[in-house]
Structure formats: C-alpha cells, structure tokens
Amino acid sequence: MTIAVFEPFHPIAAIALTPQAIRTLAPLCQTIGATLHLNENQATADAFNLQTYSIPLKDHLTDICPQYRAFIFCLATGAVIRLISPLLSDKEQDPAVLVLDPAGQFVISLCGGHQGGGDRLTQLIAQQLGATPIITGASASLNLPAIDTLGIPFGWRKGQGDWTGVSAALAKGETIQVIQETGSTLWQQHLPASIPFDFGDTPTIPQARLWISVSERQLALPSDFPQVQWHPRVLWVGIGCIRGTSKQMIASAIAQVCQQYHLAADAIAGIATIDLKADEAGLLEYCQERQFPLKTFPPDVLRQVSVPNPSSVVEQEVGTPSVAEAAAICAVSPVASLLVPKQVFKSQTEAVTVAIAQAEREYTGRTGKLWLVGMGPGSLDQITPAAKTALVQADALIGYSLYLDLIAPLLRPGQIVEAFPITQEKQRSQRAIELATWGLTVAVVSSGDCGIYGMAGLVLEDLQASGWDGKTPQIEVFPGITALQAAAARVGAPLMHDFCAISLSDLLTPWEVIKKRLEAAAMGDFVTAIYNPRSQTRTQQIIDAQAIFVQYRAPQTPVAIVRSAYRHDEQIALTTLAEMLHHPIDMLTTVIIGNSSTRHYQDWLITPRGYII
Ligand code: SAH
Image (cartoon, rainbow, N blue to C red; front, side, top):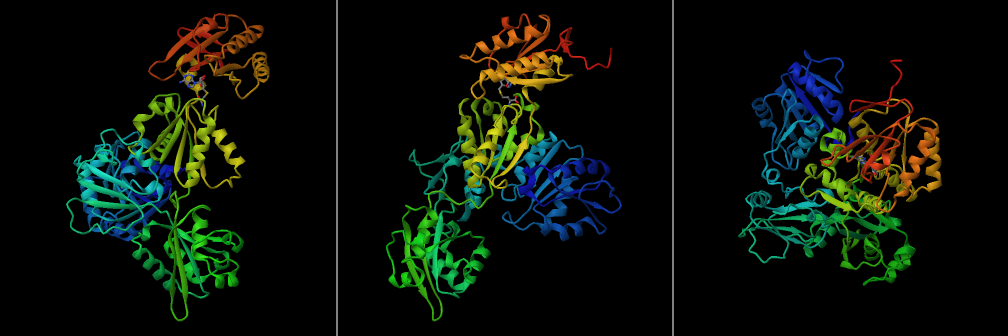
C-alpha cells in the first residue's frame, strides 16, 4: 500500500540497473508510489508499477524527464550526475533528484532540494528505510528553514528578488531583517534559538531582507543588500462586468489596478462577483487560467453591504447598488474594508469594474489533511516508519506537550508545533481541524496508538459534528504500538490468550460502567490490561478494581506493573494480584493482570496459549 505522505511528490520515477539495486528499490516503489524503470532485459514480472525501456538509459531519461517531479536513482552518484546534467535547467524547474545506495543505507539529496522538494523527500525515504539522509544544503546543516520554501504551507507565492543572495546570507549567519506586513506568523514560532532573523525587535543594520506583504516591490534594483519577497494570498478582487466582456479585458483591468496600487498579482487569492456572473465566459476563463477560486454572491446579500461607490444604474439592472466593491468585501468577511475602491475600465463594447479587499487570513489553495498519528510508547525506535514520515512531513503537529518532547528529535525547523496540556483534548482536536480546514497538513499526535484511548476518535467525532463530507480535510490514521503491547513486550508474553483493555478513567465514562466491565473481564478470565490506573486525585478506582479481581482469581495470579515502557525512566514490577497495590502505580503505568493460567517464570510472564499441555 502506498503511504499518503508521499503523494505531494508524485509522480516519482525510480531507476536501478543491478539486481541488488532492484531488490532495494522495488519494495520502496510500492510504499512511496513510484514507477520503477528497468531495462527490458532486467524486468522482473512481479515488480510493482513497472515501466521498461529498450533504448539507452540516457535517452530514456530525456523522454520521461518532463513527466516526473522526482527521480530516485539506485546507482553510483557519478553516473547519476552524468545522466541528469543535460536535463537540468534551473532550480525553479528542476525535479528532485535523489540517489540511494544499493544496500539502502544512505539517501542523498542531489538536486532540486528546496523547490523540487528533494530534501524533504530524502528525509522521508530515510525514515522509511531506516537509512541516513544526506542533505548538504546550508539551511539543512544549520537546522534553519529554507527561505525559498517557508511560505509553501500557507500557499504564499514567491515574488521577485535575489533569492540566492538572501539564502546565502542566511547560510553565512548574517542578520536577515523580516518585515512581515500580512500573512500567518505561525512560521516564526518554532525557529531554532540561534536563528539570525531580526523581526524588528533589535535595531540592527540588516545584511539581507525578507518582505512578506501584498505589495510588489522592485527589488531587482542595485541595493546594498539582497532582498526577497513572499506574497501571502490575501487579496480578493471584486469584479463587475457587462455580459460578454473578454478574459483579456478583465486580466488587463486587474493588472492595471495592481500596478497603480503597487499590489502584487501573486497576492491575489481569488475573484468575487454576483451570482448572475457565475457563467460569465471571460471571467471563468480568467479564473481557470490562473487557478483562482470564484466566489459568487446573490444580489440580496450584496445589497446589505455598505460601500463607498454605490450606483443606482447598477441597482436597477441587477438588484444591488454595488457588485465589485460589495463582492470583494463579502469575500473576505462582512466587516472588512476595501483596499482599492471601484475602478472602472471601458472599451467600446466591454466594461469591467474592479475593487479589492484584503482578508485577514491568507487563502492557502491547498486541501487540508489530518493525520492521526500514534507515536508508540515513547522511544523513537518504537515508532513505525510510516508514522515517522508523517511526523516529518506534516506542516503542523498538535499534541500533549510530554509526547511532543519525546519526538522532538524528529521535528523540522520551522514546523508548527502546538503543545497543549494533558486535559485539553477537545482544544487539540478543534485546533487541528481549524488548521486542516485552512489547508495545512496537520499531524495529531497521540502516544501509543491514536485510536486506542487516543485522539483519533475525538477528531472524527468532531468532524462528524461539523458536517464533514468525508473528504476535506482528508484523513489518514497511522497506527502505533499501544501501551498494552509495549508493557507486555517488556515482561514476556502475557497476552497470548484472550485479553481486554479497560481504562479506569471515569472522566468520560461513569464509574458504574467501568465497574461492570471489570467484573465481566474478571469473571470471563480475560487477561486484563488496565490503562489510566491512578491519577493524583483519582486513587480509589485501582483499589476497587483489585478488589473485584480477587473475587474471581487466585491471590497469586501474576500481575505486571509497567511504568513508562520504552522511556528512559522505565520501571517494571512483577508481582501478584494480592500484592499489586503495594507497588507504585500512576498515570504513566499500565497494569496487566494475568488470567487463571498466567505464570511467572524467571523474570518473565507467560500466558500459555495451549500448545504444550
Ligand atoms: N493511546 C495510548 C493510551 C493513552 S491513555 C496508547 O495506545 O497507548 C494513557 C494511558 O496509557 C496511561 O495512563 C498509561 O496507562 C498508558 N501508557 C501510555 N504510555 C505508556 C507507557 N509508555 N508505559 C506504560 N503505560 C503507558
């Protein structure tokens, strides 16, 4: 099965020439959804998504290069350089090019590391294979976010400027002044402490400058230091036009307004108009060509909006005194004000009006994703490779602070990390849905498995309550090793026969219900894993639970008390049902009560399955 995390890099081509390289690449292709290209003499029938070629590899690459966003070569780096160099143009266009050694130990990001996404793909594949990622770009080694990719999660567009100069200044550790006039500041919140950004709090002489704004600045002029500009898409352009106005007329009117007001066309989020114009051919063509969303509003909504330039002629015709101004305001929010009031452009047969309003929050143009990730009991090597790739790739991570600290070594600079206290599950879920609805890829992190007393159910319930269509945001659940498995693994094989899990937390479940389940489990001779056994304030439940089990099981029944399994402060006690309450038990502990045939042997717990009578 292909892991969804790799979809943004598709289509991916993989190239191998030797049997060992094919053995390494073929399963990887399946996981990441890549097409394996093999010479027809080497093609094995069972490879997933296979394409064969009969011409020299160099010529085959020339043929297929335009079709792919990423290439993974499993051959010598020197050979790869010779093969791809004729195919490269510039870093805005180049595909991601990765090299993997045939033993699958190293993944090298060779080319297209930033805008081609190669560095990120390298990290993800390395996580997937347990290989070492080799990324030699300066920002990666300094643990800095790359200047030319930092706006991507928010759908910002790169404007003019000396991108190489500013990236070089960052790599040299020079001070980069950031002037952010609009757009999300979430990217600023988790930068490494050593970051040389100056956000205006320390008056220094800048050595480079980063603008984040709606304005179009002429940065190409000779200046003392390099400057670049990102444009968050916050501008909504209200359009009114007479029937039959051409795409060219609309495009030229908008371009003129942008120029006159020094606004970047890249800062345009979309177009707004009256619903009467939802089928206006020129407008639709314009939107389609630029991939702008078109928001339309009925006249009775538009007429409620107070605008600077109402027109009685327009009102007579379409039932509202304003189309362009009112639609622009409606598109951003009912209380917004206009950045550019109505401008009229006329030719002999065509007429178009343009007004622009600025939204508080940028339009990302992305389909949000919610990844519900189980991070296992706590150590990095107990996280599944798929879950690791999700944690690395997500734009934002949301979870309980203790768990986010445990996975901190996996996180990328500039990734949005929002830690919440232990009780704020509802807030975590709401925030994750909010960010994903906006267009971000959000990982909601739970310890163990996220679908076992974790966040997955809550997020799905909240989505259902909000009328979610099942598609947007997209959901993907990444399973993890749950506490009962982790605890069991540390003490042997206590879960070899029928077992159950019971949480003693009565915050969401009435104690009477929990008691009934404890009795049923005890009576049914289930091996029982107890989650949430005791908190600082909730101390009686574990005492009651033990009292229930002694009614049905022998006092010598083996019990394992496992605290912080797989974490640095792990503690394990093997005891009995009679003695269990004499051991420390807290919220980081899982208690496993054996069934009637569970036994201790040496330092291990065994529940016989029945193979040996
Ligand atoms: N989703 C988690 C469970 C969350 S409920 C999972 O699947 O594991 C929290 C409870 O899980 C804790 O009170 C404790 O009982 C148990 N737990 C979580 N991590 C643990 C660990 N590393 N060692 C022992 N118990 C753990």
